[in-house]
Length: 149
Image 1 (cartoon, rainbow, N blue to C red):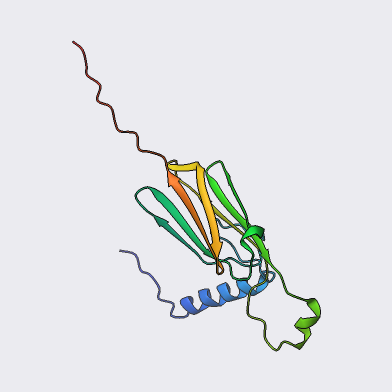
Image 2 (image 1 turned 30 degrees about the horizontal axis):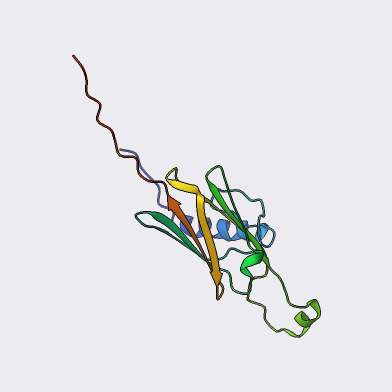
């Protein structure tokens, strides 16, 4: 049996290191899910992804953006959403005491399974909500093969 020394301040030290690491990164350069530190967007719209029997539904909150200004592409099984929400006028910002609403470009990518039909994707936007519907391919039923003797 090995002896393990107990260090009560170890957890606090780890927390301090994480906080220091966050402040060392440039503003807006937090790591994304894949672990990359490349800045691809200034903000990320909230997204819900739902799988139904015959389709996938992606719903994204994009208030203040005209749906026609959102670029949606599908390539190699990856669905990409790109867009931008900008300030109304630069000179209006000077009187603000607080700016909390995210502005700038956004970029979201979703890997879709092989069952997604890239040719049957529809998108619509209304009241700041973008809905993307991706139909699934028709299921191919397994075929029974008889073995001849």
